[in-house]
Image 1: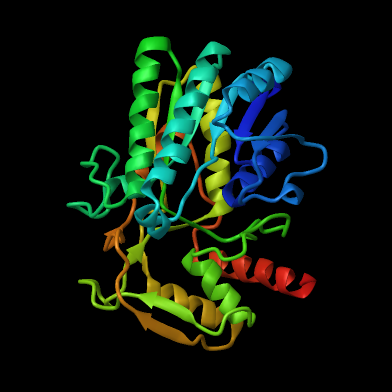
Image 2: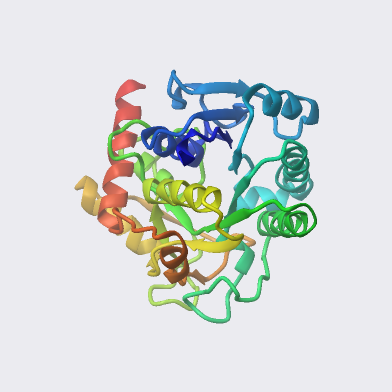
Length: 331
């Protein structure tokens, strides 16, 4: 059976990675997590999931992990994800996102891995010419984060052509929310994600929410994004794994719902869900931010048979807020 294959999840102790691990574990896949815990949390990984601590750029460690666990497929989610940080620290992003991915791809080929799933991003599109943006649209990243991911995509494509490494590149749009059962959620202190920041403000952990730019050419002047529930995204990884191990061809797929919400609309949804207004602090635009990025979302449904369950901004916000309240109560 396909789900007897052993799966390595890099970054499995992080926000998205922990949800992917839960989805795989719920579906019966044997899972190995590799994470250096630089931003992840050990407690986010279930006790009965095998955990290896270390960095994906450590070639010797990778060789040991692949040999020890007989890995059949890799889901690569480890990496750095902040656009402003990538602008300030580009070399760190190229090292962590591109060079370390190269090392992992090389180790995967040496180990005879049968499938590879890559956590990429809508940031590869930059400011698209058309919205919604399709997978074959021009790729013009606006920041080192997007460039570092696009470079890894190309390495993976070239490695597949030369060495046969079937893969699915998943281009995430704006991932948000938390596990509906409360088992995982965004827990990294100081995170810069809009919804995380807004939820922290809602429970009193922050005095205000910064609004970076209100003069964009959009309906309300703020940036527009396609927000996808993290549990729907996690399920897309399970579908991609099943697809590859059943003999599916390599593919590039957008992970989004196909509709956008502005920053102000998301903040309004948080205020609506919490029953209390947010204090919003106007700030200048941030370097590297795109104006409007919304997915053309048909291909992933067609190729993987993926059907989202939480395609509702109030559900996304409600799950995120519930998780933030639990964190606040524990603290």
